[in-house]
Image 1 (cartoon, rainbow, N blue to C red):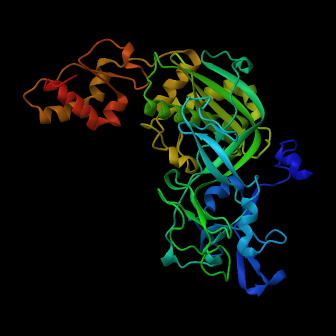
Image 2 (tube, rainbow, N blue to C red):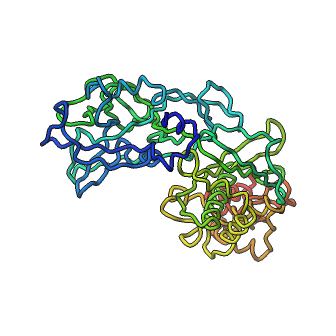
Amino acid sequence: MLDIVQEEGIVPTYSFPRNVVSFTIEDESTQGAGGYPQIKYAPQRALELALADYAPGRTVTIDKRRYKSGGIYASPTPAGIKRNMQASYYFGENEYFRTIYICSKCNWFSTERASVCPFCRAGVDSHQMLKPWGFAPEGGKEISHADVDEERTYTDAPFFSHVPEAGKLEATPYRNIRTAQLANKKIIILNKGDDGNGFTVCRKCGAAAVATQNQVGPALPFEPPFLKSGPCTHDRESGIYLGHEFLTDMFMIELEYDCLHLTDNDEICRSATITLVEALHHAVTQTLDIEYDEINVGWIYREEPVGHKRYIEVFFYDNLSSGAGYSSKIGDFLGDILCSAQALLKDCNCEKSCRHCLDNYRNQRNHSYFDRVLGLDLLKWCLEASLPEQYSEPEQQKRLEALVGLLRRNYPEISIPEIMVYPSLLNSNILPHAALRFSDYDLTQWLPDTFSTAADCMEGRGA
């Protein structure tokens, strides 16, 4: 009964820890019930963290010994199931093994068959998802430090299934921001392996490894994740995603984005969005006086079927399934949170981001996306519908120094045409005419391509 009410989000699982898995290491020198080795170590992690920390290929250090994760395994096995056939039991349970449908472009998912994403209108792909019941090392044994060849994989940003209804979003005092309080909504956390290729998993003994591109059937020899087993000779399946679906309360902030006035370049828009979402995450934890990892955040784009509008749906959800109550408080402090995010993006003196404003260990995978200026410009648009201010002539010349230096060294006899520099978040179509127009991003992230464009113009090959 307790499992059922927790699965449906009726009672909060932070009071009754449920989705916790072990990294099981057996002791070959002792025998337990049924003749199996007794458990020597069994450190535990919440499943959403174990999906990365204990994933096949990762190394785990316990009591100064190193182990390489090599399978999905738990001890003891279900009643009546042999140890070397344990995985066959879980592969037959829909709770553990199922087909999911995820958008090829954004972070929408469904457990029902779908072909088009309701958010961004992109195509939907089907994948097999396995919910791990536990993890164990290759062959059940430790490895020497010389043998360490770790394969690190990570969980993606969370996937959401909720499609917001316009009539249920609440207006705010801010021009391009609406909100909604959402209860008991589904979220999936996925580890898609290396470059989305998933994992190769034995459907009988649970031996597993990181899959490679276009891998079909058995690859390298596998050792089952338990002692005294010998090599795995069973059939294996590749392309499996490791994942965990759960219900939780969420607070949604919808940001309206106008592609007539703001850039429609996906890379710039993504950088601005990731930066602003991270600033909001910091602001929420500071305002509510909670730890950074006590509340999570994800986002997804929603495109209008026609027209120029794009919506950025930002979802805050409690780190524990069914909710610990933090997300429900965000609406009460929305103004304070937005002010805190604005100060965070505005007051630092770094070029893009640093440990004093946005960077920390937990968000290191996004450090290359962070850009305080882009995030601040997007926030100002959301608050007041104000566009980024154009640069003065001296500001433009300073930003052009690197490009002009390259052009003068390569084309000393040709005069450099008029070049306008504008904020990256602006749509260049609303700007006055100039021989060449480049954004901040053009002059920093894409300087080689920008140089080629300017050189072609100077040589009369184009503009």
